Image (cartoon, rainbow over the protein chains, first blue to last red):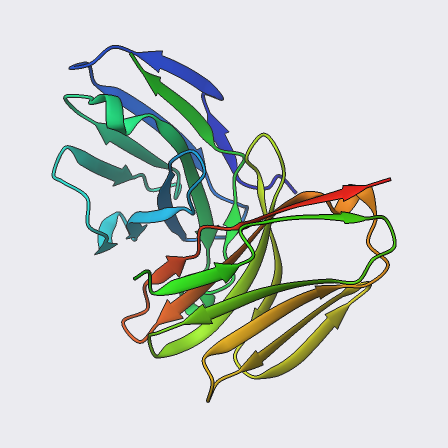
Length: 113
Length: 108
């Protein structure tokens, strides 16, 4: 049973570019959450998707958008990249009815130069 | 002031020592999580608590809802316990708030 997977592992982008990160949830899970973790900080909640809709959102600008597909996989898109967007992006999956039990992926490390 | 505060920020100890990491929060919560993050980024959930105490192997987690405080204890610490330990709470709006983490280094 595969756990949560994320791709790519590492990514280097230039300021102003756009990036798409991908996440496949643990088998059987229907909810995907995205987090940003800057170096030396705890993760911060970006948003959560359930049934292909954004269910909750943290304090992130509209440059951060997402999508959930019918197979429950998800994408995180960031437009007009800033240097400050450099971080580890974590995806976690869960069942909505037991949302507190989240399983985390290995993360995608994004560097913006 | 952060809604979730952890102490200490960094901790170095000798193998075999008893370790305590503390977490204080200022919001009403539905549940509290202790997470472990190894170099490279992957996060593993250790405990989810809403009251009392839980034990798993050498790890013990406690929570005092009235005092808004939780502790993670590691008995007979080992170098493989070296990691960042993160406290996270679920607030009443069902949103998760993370602490900044405690970086633990166990020396052999």
